[in-house]
Image (cartoon, rainbow, N blue to C red; front, side, top):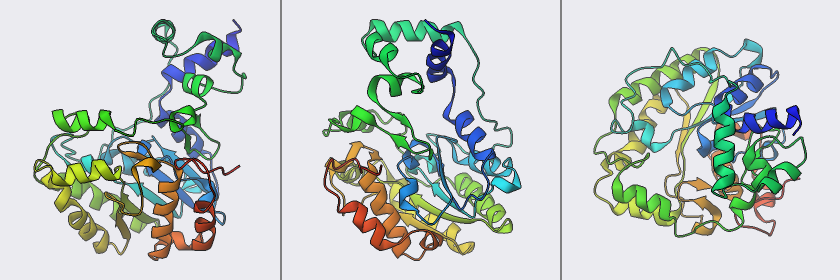
Length: 321
């Protein structure tokens, strides 16, 4: 096995998204729009913003308190004019994360070479998670196990392609339903919006305001059946109060925020899982934010977005070239 191919496989196990995205964004210039958040922002595509220098930094952070340090460490030449900020609902649930203060110690995870990577590779071959034939027959320029085995991974604009995962997802969303049943893994129960998280958000927006960076925030969507289940469950009171609480913080800085927790103009078939929408969902989100008069209106048009949405095909995938 060639050394280069081994290194590529190792990268799929030992490099964090934060390191990849941090490195790439730091080298950008003329960046107009930056999507920042967890995997729940990864479906924003450069084709949504034909008039913009765009990059998707989804995965660069996994906690709200990491967003400000991420932006601060960027060279001034790499700082965007507009940030699309994903505000995962559980960011504001103290039972998931106390979010006591901005994490000034945040640094992007740097990959390290380790024998553990190869042990994990062999284990995944053994349990048939990946096929050795798929992996070693894949082109050398495909980096990482998911890309080689399932055609999923990051595109040049930083957005994520789900590959075969988007072809036949579990539309019963059993994983999300199990999380709700047990109240774990980002679905912890909670009655109140965490005031410490709101303070962290306020600090972030105040800094961006001072740097002349517009922030367009949004609460990302759940698949309609999961959103309905969360709304009916009496143990997620914080989610009911969250849109108003977050809106107050954005209003105080004159910035836009949108609540897409439950999107009535989407269907379960447009979601990859219970809390990750596909391309069409995020094209609709972009359309709503553009039509809502946010700072994104300077970089996208409703007509172009509607044209993308009218294209036939997989309800979770837009063929964007």
